[in-house]
Structures are given as C-alpha cells and as structure tokens.
Image (cartoon, rainbow, N blue to C red; front, side):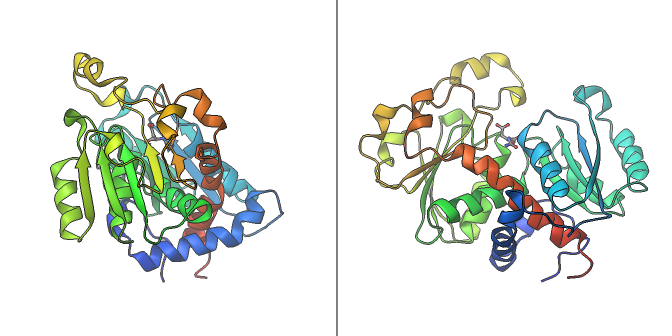
Length: 307
Ligand code: NCD
C-alpha cells in the first residue's frame, strides 16, 4: 500500500483495502490522540490553508499533527470570494510548498483541491472543495461506524442536503465499497446529484431514494444527519423553501433499533433537537473526536518516510 506523498482528493480514488488500511492505523494511533506521547512526525510541517470557515477539520488536523510532535503553519482566509481566483491560489501554493511537507486545503470552489494537486509538489489533502468532496471526513465517519457500530451488513440513511453536502458525496462513494444499503432521504430539491447517483449504481451500490424518513427509520443502523448548506444556494428564497424540512426529535426515535447511532459531521444548525444529544443514540461529538486518530493515520502514511 503506497501512501507516501500521495494527494488525498476524493473518495473515488480509494479502494476498500486502502480505506481499511488507514482505519486500522487510526485504531493503533488512538491512544496518542488521547494524549500518549509520540515523536512519529517530529520535524514535519503541515500547512493548513482554509479559504472557508472550519472548526473541527482544521483543529483536528492541527491536533493530530501536534500529538505526533509535528508542527503546523497556516492561514485562514474568511473572505473566500475575493481571493478565490485560480492564479492567486496557484501562487500561494507555490510559496507554501517551500515551507511545509503537506497542505490541507479547504476552498469554496469544487475541483480546487484537484487543481492544487496538479500545481503543488507537496501532497494536498482536500478538506472540502465547495459542494464537491471531503474525503478525510468520510474516513472518520467510517471509523466512527466501525468503532460505535458495524460496517458489515450496514443499513444507513443519509438525510438532509444531499445536493450540496460534500460529506455525503464522499461517504456515499465509500459506502458503495462495503455493500451498504444506502437510503438517501432528502426533499426533492436537494436530491443527490445525478452524476453521483449514476456512479453509485455503476459501482453496484444498493441505493434507495425517499423524501420520508419514517419510511426507513426503524430499519437502519446509522442515521447520518446533515445541515442544509445555506451558503451554497444560488437563490436565498430556495433555501427558505427547504429549511427546517427535517428535524430529528426524541419522539421520532421511539421505534428505532436499540443500537442505532445518530451521526452528523457538524456544525448542526436546527436539524437535531437538543434533547437528542442526551439519548444513547447520539454519536456526533464522539465522531468529532475520532477525527484526530483518523487524521493522525492519514498524516502518518503521507508524511512518513516510506513506512
Ligand atoms: C462539514 C463541511 O465543512 O463540509 N463540516 C465538517 O467538515 N465537519 C459539514 C457542514 O459544513 O455542514
């Protein structure tokens, strides 16, 4: 398995063996995510380049690097639109590759990470490219499913904004490798893009589309909730039509499987009632923690010296 100096752009580029390899390493590194000392990445520098807001992704990458004794440099540029010119990003990348060993990039434009990887001599890790992909989120989602439930014979519902949500795009591709039953629950306007649906079908994925969560809620092992991606809507009135469509409440959990888990990439807006946080089903805060061992594993494989 070769990961050294590899770009991590899309889940489409991963085989099941490669995913399992990373998840296994993440499990081995979990004690270090909890504070055990390690020098695995001493002397390595990670650059975080975020042109869009982030809390968990950036901080868990930084934590992962620091817990393994690596260093982090970075810039956060909230005014994405004014700097999102292709050439400016290209110049920035050329400068940073002289400072760091890898770059974690979040950008509002779909395809930005792929373009960055073509320009940059050091590895690019896609931390979200517009409504495109978010592969390391998927790796931590799979890790959470494995640690808190099971990946085999999995029935999962992805609910919310399946059109603009990059976390569900990446996750759906990966789940197709595990033979999962994938229930896509969304309003008509926010269905998964047709090209992704076609890809999933070509990969032999078991996909069911519905607008009603009640159709599937009692049969699933995982409920993966997403935020309506307000910032991606070209027209605010279209957002108004769909906001609040789904809101998970404790009443809706009456007939679910005893060990069903609820996940969310976070941040959540109003799609999950606060009371749900205190049920035995909620796993989203734990899921956010698992970002650390998983990103440790990714960084270790990319930055490690041909191990
Ligand atoms: C997600 C993202 O940025 O795509 N957040 C994350 O990385 N955990 C989800 C979202 O913003 O809704």
